[in-house]
Image (tube, each protein chain N blue to C red):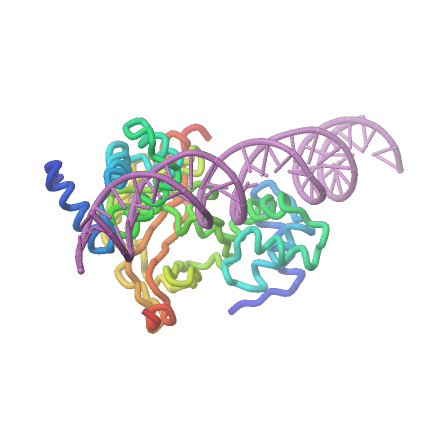
Amino acid sequence: MKTRSHQQDEQHLTEQLGATGLRLTPQRQQVYDVLLLRRDHPTAEEVFIRAKKAMPEISHATVYNCLDALVKSGLARQVNVERGATRFCPNMTEHGHFHCSGCGTIYDVDLPHALPCVVVPRGFKPLRHEVTIHGFCADCAKKK
Amino acid sequence: MKTRSHQQDEQHLTEQLGATGLRLTPQRQQVYDVLLLRRDHPTAEEVFIRAKKAMPEISHATVYNCLDALVKSGLARQVNVERGATRFCPNMTEHGHFHCSGCGTIYDVDLPHALPCVVVPRGFKPLRHEVTIHGFCADCAKKK
DNA sequence: GTTTTTATTTAGAATTATTCTAAATCTTGA
DNA sequence: TCAAGATTTAGAATAATTCTAAATAAAAAC
């Protein structure tokens, strides 16, 4: 495991955010620290509560903004496909979903021989899986 | 594409629900019909609106209940990992998530050589992907 | 075939999650 | 220093989901 000095860390953050046209701010730093400190996939609300301890004036909206910024610049992942309402699909055959970051549409896609060998920890009982590709659909890719 | 007669359809529904200890009701039938009719990954709210046209007295809570029933019995998939709050993860290395249906915890899991060849439609631009395995963690598997 | 039990549905309230708004603050660069 | 733009804040607004208690329907037991 490669570790980074605090300074390298900060530079990494600045670069990644910068590449997306965003700034490194104390709040974004703080939210990122929260994610790194306990890697337990917290919700935005949990992040808010933890960040508040070190930075009591931080607001709800800022945490959402910071999480967005981190996700957009590739510093964190959103475990759900998208925020907001959950979507449903009656197609139970082996297939994945393509989520267009432009228009939000979800398309079914083929998964020829995916997931041949996922290793789950001892004693875990996997039942089913879900694969989502994020990117841009043809229309949205053209528009950019 | 295999098609089913209405009767076969109903029997299939009854069986799948029954195996999970649930009944086939007109509302569940209706919600399932909505999902089959337009396979556009609707939200629960959209399902509610569409179901209401054929069954005006159907309620919000029932649609959620029906969707849960369909998902639990393997007749539909929930495109998001879970309902409710979105979760975040700072681990940007290639890995997947294991979501325990018992306790709700999300674990990082290895993905040795997953997704070798996902075919996306012409013109689509894939950027990243997300793999989630659903099942029971060791603790929850033991308890059952 | 009633009665009892259990599951399901309903309307609407309550809660939770997310987004929006307008004002204040901070940064950057002319 | 000043102007422009980005970011943060508190709190309101909206959206998504869950809960509650009463009513209904179905299945099981008598």
